[in-house]
Image (tube, rainbow, N blue to C red; front, side, top):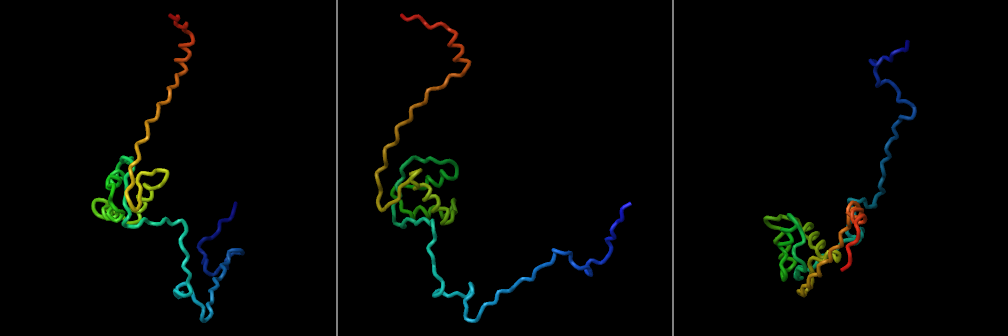
Length: 162
């Protein structure tokens, strides 16, 4: 038979197994006169501009709505708040209050999304622009026939020409 290990012994007196030793943490010593991260002053700290940060439009720039509301749900309600001729500040003030209660960052995200060249829902500039005419409707694609319909028409004789 195999021997069973006794689990009732005191483990505090045992030495740790080989390879399981903890390495002591080394504390970093800061020499006198050196500035740490928390003690840096404005003179020693260089401010780097953020990358990929979009500029905000000036508050007095005017919104021109270029398309009918293309959105659904809560997004549509926010889009309906746009009015041609209103300023950016007016729009942000409307969305910051009831019933929207949106933060500044979310308001600007909406404006940037709607002015994106891929979407071009609104235009923001120093003056209003003329709304472009709507795009002509697309022609519908011809419907494809199903295999059963194609096979049925192949077996029929062509209609006599008159």
